[in-house]
Amino acid sequence: MKVALKLAYLGDNYYGFQKQPDLVTVDFEVRKALAQIGVIHGDFCYAGRTDRGVSALGQVIDFWIDEDKAKLTRPRCVNGRLPRDIWTWAWAVAPIGFSARWNAQWREYRYLLWHLGLDMEKMHAAAAQLLGEHDFRNFSSAKVDTVKTVQKLQISEEGGLFVFDIRANGFLWNMVRKIVGALEKVGSGQKEMSWFCDLLRPELNHGAPTAPADGLILMDVGYEGLDWQVDEYSRARAAAALAATVQSRMARASVARVMERAMTLENISA
Image 1 (tube, rainbow, N blue to C red):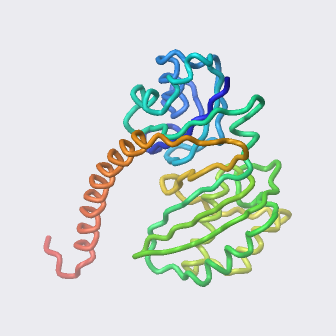
Image 2 (tube, helix red, strand yellow; image 1 turned 120 degrees about the vertical axis):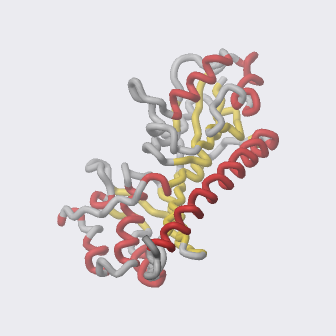
């Protein structure tokens, strides 16, 4: 039988998702955990590559198992073998012929950008130009199969933290990060709308700037015909671990903010 799992992970400690020789990746850790449990036969398929530093909430993998070992693939069993920054939290029986990559109808990413003073109205106007089917060659490091359909591009902001939610039928390498990088240029006033619109003209061969990887999250992947079973225990354990991470990182960020503000004071003493 074939099983699909939803994975969440923090990307800081990994050289991306896809396995690479002599490097620690999410694929490597998940494959090792499944092998230790004794349920994996050969390779597994995954919904999408994520680069070094990119995190995920809804990455999906699928693989074949012996039916009598199905219970061993439940999230709480797998999580016991995974590092503390990778979790599986839902599972489903997948039909024969299912592929986490090729059966995906859409993927959705969220990008978090801390930047004071961006013009939301300008960014909304620019984002509207990307909806629908376009050639995104200038928004990617890839140069083949560059026509994609953006189904949703929403931008919100709270206290200087801008949130970009982007859904499409497929994404190119660095496409989300380049979209955010270009929108930031428009929102900051460094680039005009005409420059942004020219990025949708592949014959001009312009390049969009690439936003850093650490703000990007693969939020979800859409399929038909999968009945996801959420393991509430595993989800609660992951939430508790993430809460501890938030507390630690917020403290470090606050320290940096205090020092940054102090360095800008005119009366700072040497």
